[in-house]
Length: 223
Image (cartoon, rainbow, N blue to C red; front, top):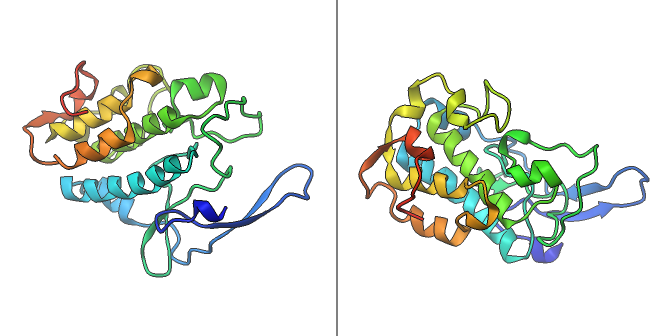
């Protein structure tokens, strides 16, 4: 667990394994609780604020991937505030399963369906690629100002179809649109990578604007 400590993730100190039906984790106490920044972001999104939010997610998850771990539960609210007001990624709910771990999840496992990749819902196994897919949903959620799949069954079409107009169709830098699109490919092997996403973030605001409904138009120009 020591090798999984990072300034960008909630620290796991240990685990209680003596219980027959569950494992209890001993984690860092974060006095700040959930940040209000995400709700403010949904109320008045801007490219600069979006970039900062995405960068915090990327740093935490990129660290886990560098340690051969997958997050397995990435979503927009996977952040808490420490006593200094710094955001840290919550990534301890399953000790960040090994990237090679593909065992089907038990029926008691709670899955955040709205952010889950298709293959996770089918097999229960999480990978680097499924984390990337979840990040793509986070990007869509922040830019659109809507909760994913709010008004439709999950994977019953694109999440944009669940939005009643409005924020999802305003212009945004094409780099953001392209990045989210590349993260959400239905085929895991065809998705972009975190390294490519980090490079893409450097070009935020430097491209022409796209309508965000173009997220689901084929061909990506950024990643």
